[in-house]
Length: 208
Image 1 (cartoon, one colour):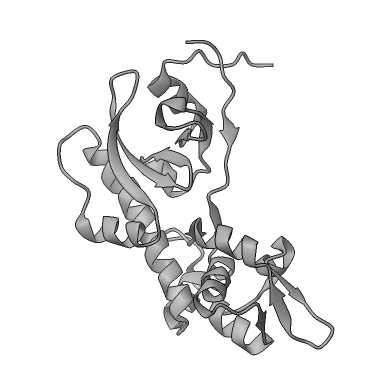
Image 2: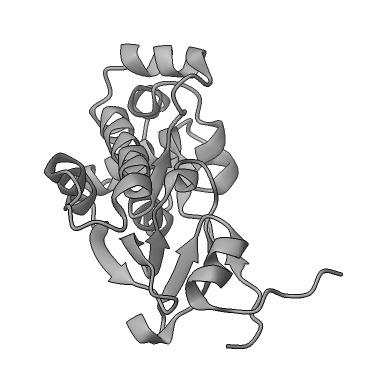
């Protein structure tokens, strides 16, 4: 196959912003008080404000962007990895927001699937049911696939991105190329460009 330059795709959003987006869809409202939003996000609203997920109105209330909320709620909440950002992990444990705890559960399931796939991609074992159920509850499908180079992989489908799972996907932003075998708008993604080239038997782009 020829050369192709993968694109970086964002599939994670800040956990607080994800929690707000999930809350917006659950309530069906578009206007909220500051107290309500802080309670949902368990803290600062900086990320949600910067991204335009919410805007402050003249009367002190906040209005949500419904379409952006739909997108954010279909992506992955970004959660701290074990051993990192201990202050954030401690704050999350003390948080009583159902939405933020849901974000933590999804993020943890993603991390566990990445670690599981690193060990079991080539065997016939099925991913742990408890991990799959959490992800599929939020529209993230988990399946096995065989790549053009013959490798067997575990794939998690987020929107139209088919993400090949390995331990690097616990932290890396996926690198993706169009993959018409899975649909006209499908993208195949891996944790690094080199891995994606290897799976697809593509020639890497020359260094400039």
